[in-house]
Every structure is written in structure tokens, then in C-alpha cells.
Length: 437
Length: 153
Image (cartoon, rainbow over all chains, first blue to last red; front, top):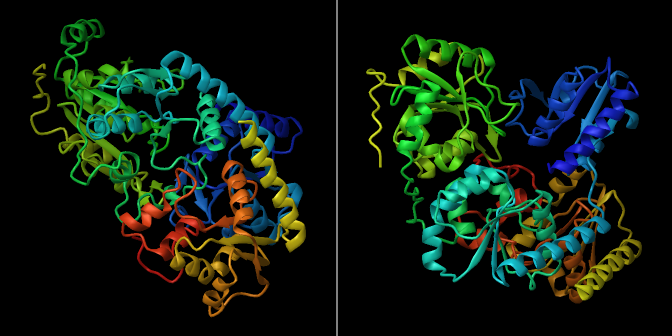
């Protein structure tokens, strides 16, 4: 959800907590989604832990969302209990509410955190979008606008890998490439993409799209996504992972209209060897004998701290220098490892110089997929993305991003996972030699 | 932009009139069968009951732009509480423009396949292995699967 919507949800939950409506209650959050994950984090900040997450999708049932078991509504023990409280943040709130009411839940037990956009809001957004469009026109002229309205750096990287081929087929003298975060800008900078414009607020992308929805002929806009939910008349997202419509094929066909033979192409990495050498020395990291851990992902698997702590310990015993890709306060370094932060436009070079990378699947894995290093990527066996498992949809091999990564699906609580990961590092640990470019 | 805003208000007005005239309530789903793809329209009727169940709806109002279309659809067995109505195509387009700008209800659907800009349903049907039944169940009705089919693609 957008930052301003998240702030509204935080406020609403804060009010409910203040009124004592959530404490000593059995809490249920309806619908597995990124929004639900954020709501769980807010509840936890108040010391509240939901009993279960509810979902009608059979493929999501009996999986975990932020470590909480997902069950169908029918399995709630004593659903009519006065102590039960249901939190909903979903565009499908009407049917969710109807379903709960049919099961005997009272209206007062359902807390709606979601608000539909009013017509007034939509018109206001469109007006703001017009202003933004004029600002862009003033700066760049009336040229084609490519918009990436998401924070996913993996998406930007995939866009970049097809950019050259797209431009060859659709030559444009000039264009502006609009992103909504600095991280996305860095990912785009890896490629030969010009006029990268970072919007001041994420919400501005929503404004621009709303203006496009009002006056499609006045905005020369292309959204660089297979199916962006704000354009609600395009149902493509519901086919993600269905009949071979995975990440790369969808982007190739529906974003770029490229033939199936078109393959993603990694960028040529800038030579930053000398720059990195100094940093490696400073941080006491060893060239070709350092493992970069990447334990954080916005949307996919989460592994417990215990796993990362134990893994880091084992790697250190084996003689590796171990560091954690840690970009912000909410993503602390794994215990006993060196926190490192590297900008995305030099991330592949970092990984190449380190020699080893172990991480849960995140957008960062796309960015470093072309690095010549030993890469181990972890996928929760039960994580799903629309019609496919996360592994089916996002694995780097099928995406055409790399052949050499070891990609492992894990079950939560798998005690042998550390051994499986270490096995993938190869018999002669530490043989990775950075050859430079 | 001013004209576009007026156009949207026109659509909003038509929606209010349509609701009153055809008895569209929160308990009903509304479907506009546009004939862009006849098979798609037929599957929309075949799986109407599944959509109504998903939305906890007790009835449906189905709009056609031409009464000749009714002949094609009357052989499909429909659940109780469903009625067909005629509505001029010009008004449907205005209403759709409004809906495309502002999703004012989650119980209203149009079977357009290639409009407005950015609707890729038509391309999906033409250029991939997705068939009309899947397009209806997954894309339009968002049922997560095709009832009665075992394969998940």
C-alpha cells in the first residue's frame, strides 16, 4: 500500500488500540497479502499477535504469513465468540464481510481498515497528475513517458535487461524514464537508460496514472509493468503464473511486445575494482572469500534469525569473512557479521569481489544475478505468487537471468537447511577469484 | 481535461439512473455483455452462478446492447434472480468510461476485451494459450480457478 495509506491504517489501528478494542481479543486478519504483512507488523508494535490469518484461497491455507498460520474462515474455532475481532484491508472487503456475517460474526466485530477511493479522490489525483505531467513536459518536452510505479528493484532490473532490444525495435529520439525511489534509480542506472526521473513522492505515480486514465490521449505514457492494479480494467495480473505466464514471459510479451527468442541481457558492469578494494580492506573483507548474506525480502520468504545466526557462525568457522547486506535500521546485520551497504549500481561488482552470496529471493537477487560468484537463493516452499509458487514464478534460471545460481526451496523448520546451503558453496570453499572486468 | 471531467460526471449520473430504473442493489451483480468475443460472453453466463456466489449476490442484471443477442444467450441455464435488459451502446460506453476511471463497484463487469487503453484481455486470448472460459473465471470473475477443471495451467 502507498505510504499515505499505510499511515492511515496505522492511525486507525492506533485508535482501536486506544479504545481498548483489540487487547485481550482473538485477532484475525483476512487475506494473505503484502498489506496484511504490514498490518501484522503494526499490531506487533502494540504487542498484539493475531491468532490466524484467514484466506479463502486453498493454495494459501496451511501456509504461514509472517509466521502466522493461514486457515480458512470455516476453521476458526468458535467463530461467533464475542472475543473474536476481524481486521480487513482488501479491495474485496464486501465479500469478506458478507462471508463473516453469514458465519454469525457481528458487524461490530469486523474492523474495516480499507477505504475505497471516492470519485472526488480520483478527480483530485487526476488534477495532481496533470500538474506533474506539465512539470515533466516543462523539463523534458512533450515526449514519451515510461513509468515504473513500483519500488521493486527486481522489476526495474528485468526492464533494463530488455531495454536495449526494445529500443532497437521501437527507436525513440527522446524519452523520460520515471521511477519512484532512489533504489530504483540506481537499478536503472546499471543500464543504458536515459533521463531517469525520480518522483518526489511515491503517490505521484498514482496521480500520473489517474490523469492518464482520465485523458489517455493527452499523456504519452507507458507503464512498465505487465498489469498494474490501478488500471483495474486490465485483468492480466490474475493470470500470473498460469500456463507458463511467469515473470519474464509476461514482461517480454505484455510490457515490451518482444518475440519469445528475446532473452534478458545483463548490463556491462562498470569497473569499480580499485574503489571496492579499498572498501574491502577497510571492512576487513577477503576478496573471493567473503559471503554476503541477504536475509531480507519485502514480499517473499522470511527465515528466522536463528537460521541466519547459525549459518553465519558456521561460515566463520570455515574461514569466510561474513557480511550482511543491510540497508536500513529495520534490516539489522545478522549477529556477528559485518553490516555493509552498497548502492545497487555497484552491487554486482560487490558480489563478484566477495565471491559468495546467500540470500532469500528478493529484488536484490535479480540485480546481482549476472555477477560471477557462487550464489545460493532461498525460496519458501509454500510462498505463492498468484497462480504459481514463488519458485516457479521467480526462479532466476527460468527467468533467463542466470544458470549458475543454486536455488533452493525450503520448508519452515528444516533443520538441515544450513547443511544444504553450505553444500552448495562447493567442495573447495573459497576458490572464487574475482577476475575483474 | 474539463470535457473529460464532464464526461465522467455524465457516467456517474447514468449509473445512478440505471440503478434506480433496473433495481440494481448491493445484493445484485451487473454484467454488460458487449459481444467483443461471443464465446467470452457465453462463458460469462455459464459461470454467472459462481460469480454470484463469490460476491454473495442474490440476483443479477445482465445488459445487452442488441436484442438479437438474447437469442444466443437464452439457451444457457441461468440461476434464479437473473434478468436481461437492453441498454443503448452509447450509454454503455459512457458508463464504461466512468467505470474505467473510477471503480465504483466491485459487482459490475463489462466484457470488453481491448478497451480502454491498457486492457490486455483480447491480446491474452489471441496470443497465449488462455481460453475464454479461463479468461472469464480467472480474469473477469477472479474465481482463482476454473470450476470443474482439474488442471491449474
